[in-house]
Amino acid sequence: MALKNETDYIAEVPSDADEAAAGAPGAGEGRKRGPWFVVFIIALVVFIGSLVALGVILYSYFQGQQKYVEIAETSNFDPSTVDSEPLAQVTVDWDALRAVNPDTVGWVYVPNSRINYPIVQGQDNEHYLTYDFDGDQGWLAEYGSVFLDARNKGDWSDQLSFVYGHHMNDGSMFADIAGFVDQARFDECRTVYLLTPQGNYRLRSFSLVHCSAYDPIVETSFESAEVMTNYIQDKMDRSVVSVSDAPKASDIKKAFAFATCDNNSSGRYVLFCYIDDASAEGLSGVLGLSQDNEGQTEGFDNELSVTE
Image (tube, rainbow, N blue to C red; front, side, top):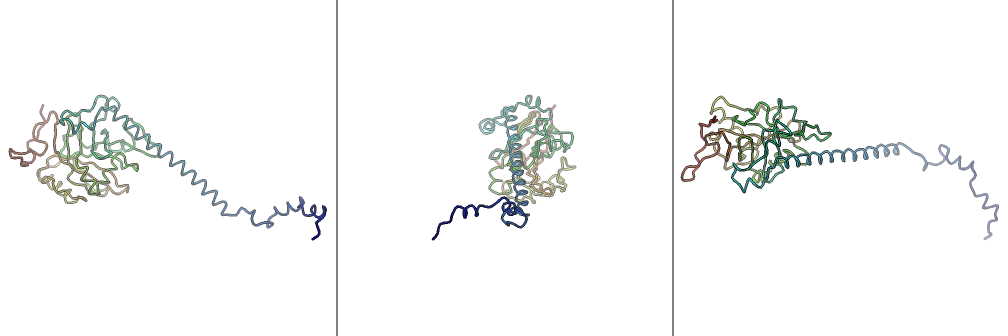
């Protein structure tokens, strides 16, 4: 085979005109940037934007968690004391909490869950949906606060007190309550500690109701013992979990409800509790289930009154 001479090699080098022609429309299909390229760029921008937004949300959750960790430290409440000390001796630094937020009315703690928060009460039921204990509004992830219904008395003297908390996607605030729909989780979280400036209550849940946000479920007082008994019995009948050891509805003269959403704008979970033990200062009468000399349950004292 004959070797090509130098002029043959030079002839094969593309000229400027050739390169220009190659870049001209229709010259090479591989160099086109069609609609799929635009779609790819848009998808890439959306993906990066989503990552940034996710990072901001996660940071917002982290900030919210850290803030309530600091509040727990301010309270000087030690959860381990609820088992190691008499209920009356379990303490919370109410002065320190009220120095941060004068709307403080209590503290709720549920063993075996993440629920361990101060309770506040506003002039309405809107403010603390978005404002946290420090008075800040969250950005993207709004923790708000755990708060007592504005229609309730701040000293917890109503026949039924309602407490609300958000169902946060990171499992904080009252998200655990929605998880109690699982019977095993409900059973291991039956005990609820409600600590107040007036005294401390150990509660026990008797029902978990799943209802609409428009269900007229909130009642703070009842015109008669019969009306309250009917109300309590209705909540027992509507419970989405089984409770075999609850007292009779007629024996429950004072109750507490803890509510959160089910991550559906129209759904709510409401945990109802009766008083298992109480050491509320300034109160006379048997608030919890009493027992006779043989250890049999007698029920609640119907003569509950506030001492001067």
